[in-house]
Every structure is written in structure tokens, then in C-alpha cells.
Amino acid sequence: MPAYVIVDIDVTDPERYEQYKAATPATLAAAGGRFLVRGGGITILEGDWQPSRLVVLEFENLAAAERWYESAAYQAAKKLREGGARMRMVAVQGVESG
Image 1 (tube, helix red, strand yellow):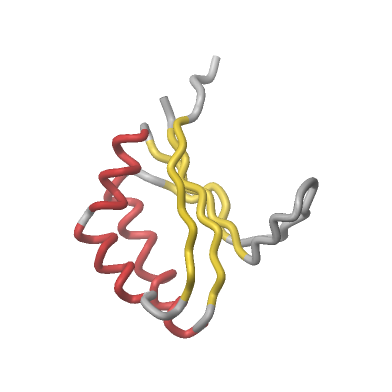
Image 2: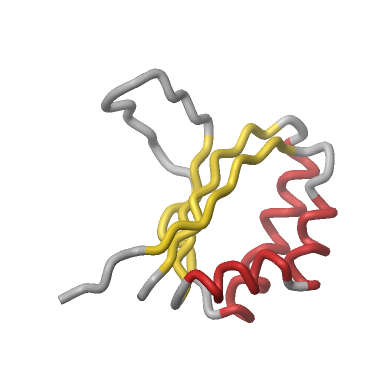
């Protein structure tokens, strides 16, 4: 069953955040993950949530998403963004298609 990582990002230092952005795709590929959403336009449909940047990642399952987050490769990428962004991140299990 697929799983998704949803990330709400407030960039505070664009230069540091760009370093993180450049390092993250390789960590995803190594974990079998992929970007579904990486920034882009946002339309608020309901409520008062005002994200400035959203990212959605897809993984084979919740365990794969957790392994990616805990991996040494992603932890090294995280260090690149220290002081460069505030992030709120959740992993959620999807539904089976079909």
C-alpha cells in the first residue's frame, strides 16, 4: 500500500535551502521514493492553512518512507538545511488502488 510524505516548508535562508534541495533527490531515489509535488502554485480551498511551499513524496509503503527519513543519506541532507527552513513533515499511509 503506498505511503506519502507531506511537507510544509517555510524557507528562511534560500541559499541553505537550495543546498538541501540539490541533495534530496538522490536520497529519494536510493529509497525508492519520488516527488509528486515539489513547490508549485497553491490555492487555499478551505480553512486558514497558509503554506508557502508544499512537497509531497510517494513511497512503496509507510515502512519505506520511515526508512528514507531515518537513512544516513537523508540525515546528511537535513544537515544542509539547518537554519535554512522550518519544516512540518508527516508520513501517511495511502489506499490501495483498484
